[in-house]
Image (cartoon, rainbow, N blue to C red; front, side, top):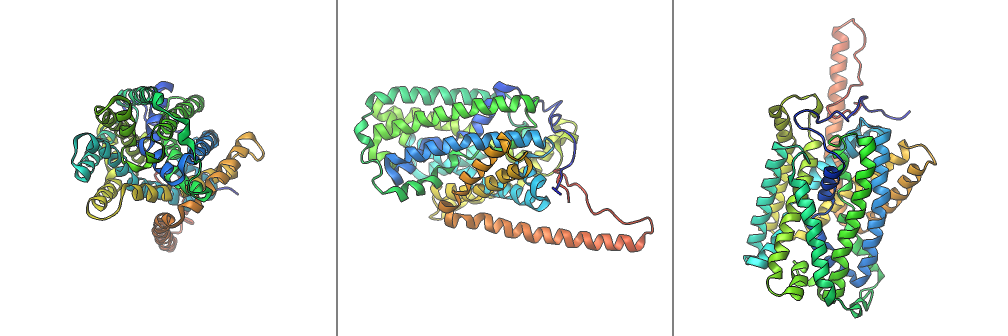
Length: 451
C-alpha cells in the first residue's frame, strides 16, 4: 500500500492578497529559477576541464531536462495536493522520505545561493576592480535583496521577475550576435584535449543546468490553473533555457577557445573581444540582472517549502511572517557560505559542487517517486524511468560532495527517531489516562505529509 498525502487542492494556494499568475509570468518565473549566473561561467569551467567536448555534456544535460521537467508535471497531476518535490517523495515513499528531500533542499540550496551572487560579483569586479572583496559584497547585497523581496512578496506576484527575465533573454541573445562574427571553427580542435573521462567529470560542474526544476515544483501553487498551465509553462521554459545556454556556450568555445575557462568572467572576455573595454561593463550589467532574478526565484522557492500551510493564512502580515520563519535557517546558511568564501580557501566552484551534491539526491528521489506513483508503462512512467536513470549517473561525478547530503540525512534520521519515540510515549500516556479509545497515530504535518 502506497503512502498517501493530505487530500485537497493546492490550486487555491496563494489566492486573494498574494494572487496567482498565468502562463507568461509563470514562464518568466520558471526561467528566472533555472537560468542563473552559472550560465555565464559554468560552460566555460566545463570547457576548462573537457575542452570543446563539454558541449556534448551540456547538450546531454539539456536533453535530460525534458523528461525531468515533464515527470514533475505528471507528478503534479497525479498528486496535486503534494507540496513540491518533497511532497512527491512523501506520497511515494512515506513521511521520512519527504522530510529528507525537503531538508536536502532547504539546507543544500542555501549553500549554493551565495555562489550566484559571487559569480555576478566576479563580473562586477572585472568591470570596477576590488577583487574578492567586491565579489563578496555584491553577493551579500543580492542575497539580502532576495530575502527581503521573498518575505514581502510571493514569488512571481510582481512585475520584477518578468522584466528581469525579458532583459536576460534580450541581452544574452544580443551578446551572441555581437561575438559570433569573431568565432573560428578551428577552436573546436582538439575536441577532447584531456580525454573522455574529463568529459564525464565536467558533468558535475554542469549539473546546475538541471537544477531549478526541483525548485519550480514549489511554484505550482503560485500558478493559476496548474493542471492546464503547468505543461505550457514547462514547454516554453525548456525551449528558452536551451536557446539561452546555446547562445552562451557555443560562442564561448568558438571565440575564446582554450582560454574559455581561464577567466572568472568569460562573458566579459567575449564582449571585450567584440566591442572593446566597455564590454566588461556590459557583462557586469547582464550578470547583475541574471543573479538578481535567479536569487529572488530560489529564495522564493525556499519560502514556499517552509513551515506553515500558506493557503490557510489570511492577510499580508500573516503570510509575510510565515515566509520570514521559513527563511530564517536558510538565511543563516547563506551567511555561513559567504563567510567561508571570505575567510577560508573555499572557492565559488566548491560551493557550486557542494550544492550540486545535495541536489542530485533530491532529483533522484523525486523522480523515483514518479516511477512509484505514475501508471506503469504509461508515457509519463517511461519518462520517469529515463529521467531517474540519467540523474543516477550523476552520483558518480558527485563523489565526495555527496558527504553534504549524507550529513543532512544523518541529522534528519536522528530527528525522525526522536519524533517517533516522543509520539509513542505520548500515545502510551494518553491511552493509560483515557478510556475513550486508542489515540490515532496517523496525522498530517503542516506540509501535508502523513506522519
